[in-house]
Length: 438
Ligand SMILES: NC(=O)c1ccc[n+]([C@@H]2O[C@H](COP(=O)([O-])OP(=O)(O)OC[C@H]3O[C@@H](n4cnc5c(N)ncnc54)[C@H](O)[C@@H]3O)[C@@H](O)[C@H]2O)c1
Image 1 (spheres, rainbow, N blue to C red):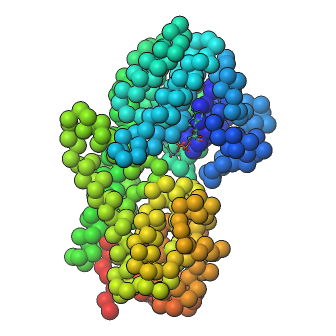
Image 2: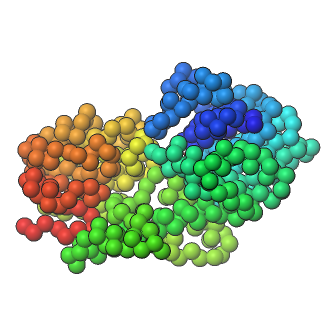
Image 3: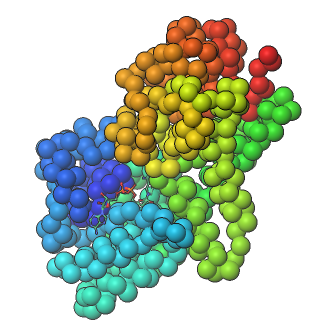
């Protein structure tokens, strides 16, 4: 199958590389010439475990190539995926569909034969109809079918998720496109990934519903964590106690500093906007968005409280900056709000992150970046674990206690047990765990 991938970001690049690994012939296109030039030189524009070797292998095999030339990418393609960004529109929170619409128009102008156009970007209900309209307006005689195929991969585990998905959702209103999608995903039959065929609008809504539900689960346990702190219960045990119930499930029940990233924040907002337009209130999702927004900043206040209330002139070491481990993505990372809240109160910030520093530099001001967690902690008045990278899971706590000016450890991911931290000589604050007795 000849596939064109329009947009070579986190989703487009991983999807394109995996499709080529299945044996398809894939051309990945991006408007960003720097990104394409880097990829042509074997340099990945993002950090994603396993991606570099997957790309290199398939480029060598002649199945994967990169271009900025749309005509070259689309000519002869039987399937054209749209994987461009759909960020929040400035000011109102609607999904900004300008990149999707522009891509549809450009594709229409470049088609040379019949093709299935597949929207992989996360788009509000009805976008497929608009993509179809744009294509037929620009190319009335085009032989195209427009399909929705939302992507569920997680950054940091994107390749495994793509190759071993729980399900593949395909929204098709025209049965002729089904054969093409079945052929594209046939290699996954071996992994028994179910192909769930639905109507196009249903597929579009499944993606938002899934993200809103997961965001709700996280926010729910975060509020229970707040209650745990006040009543002297431990949220880790509460999570385990409820997560072992199969009806609930253990995933997404880790209390922490609030969800961030490139998907949950913007997708929950966009879903609310759709609901608002349709005059169907989604009060639960509304509450989730409000609670989560407030929480990220409240985590900064939590650190300030643990430090005694006055942080002016004191140094705080932030360990982990990206919105989650194994990615360099800083979009909506809780670290941003936490650092801002601390800086607003006059704290000096030193930070360490294994992969996110380049992206973090672009969005943070007045932060000193350290080469390792111990350098960040040297002489600081607190360490704050914000992102649970593997290499931050086995810190030498005794060494930390020795080099800190004040041996205070705020663990916003509950990676460490309060007892081990206290044995090492640290004053330990987790999330949803009883505060230390002074
Ligand atoms: N990042 C994730 O984990 C994830 C997971 C599932 C779904 N999604 C969805 O997938 C979509 C893409 O997300 P992403 O994180 O990969 O975005 P991204 O910003 O990393 O990449 C988008 C790419 O599209 C390119 N682009 C924009 N317009 C273009 C055009 N007309 N022609 C060619 N290239 C164009 C941009 O230059 C950019 O490189 C979004 O809708 C997102 O919600 C993302």
